[in-house]
View 1 (cartoon, one colour):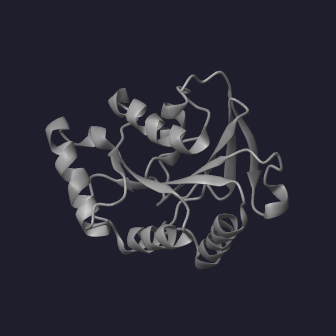
View 2 (cartoon, rainbow, N blue to C red; view 1 turned 90 degrees about the vertical axis):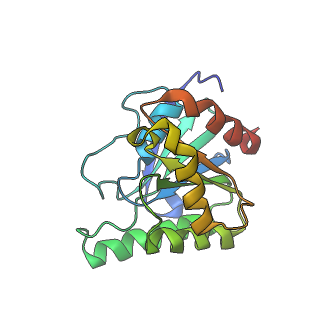
Length: 194
């Protein structure tokens, strides 16, 4: 993918705020601090386009990033952040679900899971939600730089064994530090936005 332009478009909390230009949307879901913003920055070769934070739970809105004026990366708030109040969690959950169920432009859901840890109960719930949505999706196992390169493939398989024992969905490693996985991720994304 040749990135000619990439810019933040809008933060939204309701359908009337979503972009209305009908461009394909590539949606990122995952727990807080799993690396969704870093994934966007790495894929677009921008250091600080999507705001990253060492403090999980910072993203409380749906952020749309316009790529080449041809599609959006859509960063959804992370789930499972315990310090967010129950009221805030419910509010964030409501507009995540509203977006996933009402947007007509979702071309691909990218579900990020930390490669270092077994899927949590929240990860399993989100995985089943994404499967039931009927929309195309891939699973990205993030933070692959945090483990030895020789252990990456086995770690991806272990996560797949838990979530997808039939191995009939795409699971890929990713690292914002090691750029070696970026091209494979783009190959998958491009299948759904071209």
